[in-house]
Image (cartoon, rainbow, N blue to C red):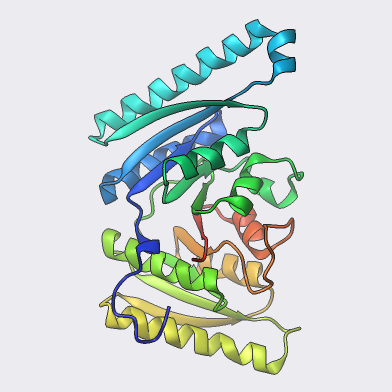
Length: 285
């Protein structure tokens, strides 16, 4: 995002939303928020589920696969009925594969999805999940934005928190947050964090990042404020969420470390694990 930008980037648009549901209680929040999000933004909703299938499993237990397929179809029909009742244009997709996360990613690419909405298992589950967890892998490897939703969460109505470190992903997140704020008429708090073990020069960048985004938001006519915190990023973000009453967090999926994938213990993952509201992780262009 350049200082001279006057238009919202296409990366901020959510015209094609996909909810990935396994039919469990942990998908309830994702289903609810995805439907509300699609209705509010006039987006097309893809309702997707995956059935675990492999040659070995098919040979050993065809009845088990058939039961899983029937349950998945019932789940898709249930979500579709709710979406149609809300007046949403939607499509159902059932995919088969040996790992659900691969099917979620493949469908998001095949359908050119702007944002995947997926549930989180437990209040702090993602912070301690094993490497094979589907949600963590989707967040880390998706080519589009991913929103992770706790099971009790609702569509945001109060305030959006943008957490930024000035990275390319953070700039894309700033654009997405602006789009959401315009659509939902919600104020935004911009937060960057001075991390004590960083160099003085790196710490000073936090204020510059906040001021740059704040100037852009004000030029866009948004109700925005800027804050600079100090401490460990995930802890400062969690405290700011609470202090400001934020019910949506938007942040880059990858920070300035340049890591190619989300790693256990990263700031994004820790924030997702602590949040009681949806967290939107935005991929940089």
